Amino acid sequence: MNITGDHKYNYMFLFKSISGLQSHLAEVRGMSKAIGFVPTMGALHDGHTSLITRSIESGNYTVVSIYVNPTQFNESDDLAKYPRPISDDLVKLNRLGVDVVFLPTDEEIYPDGTQTAPDVPLGHLGNTLEAAFRPGHFEGVVQVMDRFLGIVRPDILFMGNKDLQQIAVVRKLIEFANFKCKLVGLPIIREPHGLARSSRNERLTPADREAAAVIYNTLMETYQKYHRFTFPQLKQAALDRLTTPPFRPEYFEFVRTDTLEILEARPDDAVPVSVVTAVWCRDVRLIDNMEMSGSE
Ligand code: AMP
Image 1 (cartoon, rainbow, N blue to C red):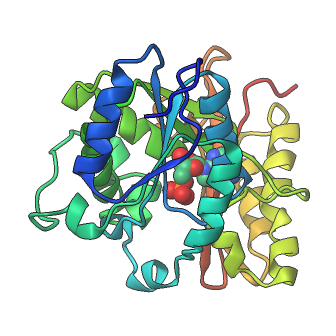
Image 2: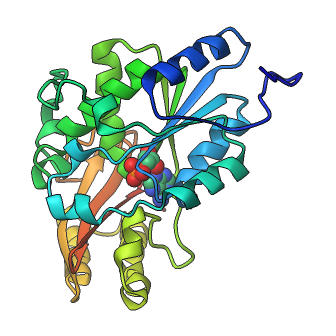
Image 3: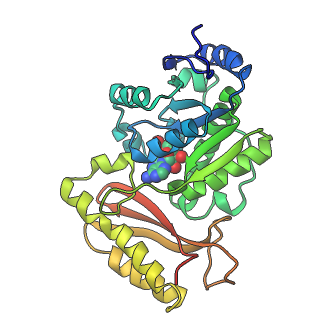
């Protein structure tokens, strides 16, 4: 094996099998570096890149997975339409200086089918917000993350705050299954006009994509007015603004940033508050959130 002085190979490894990945990682675990892991579903954009770059720049041996997990899609149409530009993704990952790409098949991840999953007690996280509108979604996330964390056994896991509830759910899994892994949540990366980066943005027409800035603008407006109005007033104004065809809001809620518990009224200043929202643009579902704490 060709290892340079700083314990880095000169090239990116690509594994499709768990056994190949694990025997490689066994060798890496003997080095001084921690293993940083960034799970993705591919169609990589700047949001993914920010997580990957953070892992690399923090000095971790960085593993990125690309796997479109069928069990977390509650709509078969969404799964079928999910973009899969794998060669472009691999070029991007190589340029970034990723150490390992893991590209498993469904058979590798679910050799015994998809019926078994750890029974993590999710509490309200399992039936509120995203869970309420995407039945089975977080069960699928728990199922695939349990597999990935068991296979990769990372020291640090990097995830995006764009999927705030997903982070809270994965934190529960880590505690429940006692994975020795630190979870780092990183800020939302946005397009120049404010729309949160997402692989699903590729399905919007250029005009819709431009108009989807309404989501960010509504979050910003709420942030600016946060202390001057009640939660019901802010919520109503936001829902009105987001109900502009072709947009249709599914929810817009104030929550505790750490627990995702829905708040009906402004809590004590010490409680971190975020707004979370899901908005349909025709047949594309977009989610976003913004921390309200810190607003004037
Ligand atoms: P996905 O490929 O959509 O499953 O996302 C893989 C990871 O990238 C997840 O941890 C997401 O939260 C994160 N991510 C997706 N979009 C963004 C974004 N716009 N900003 C920051 N992180 C993101």
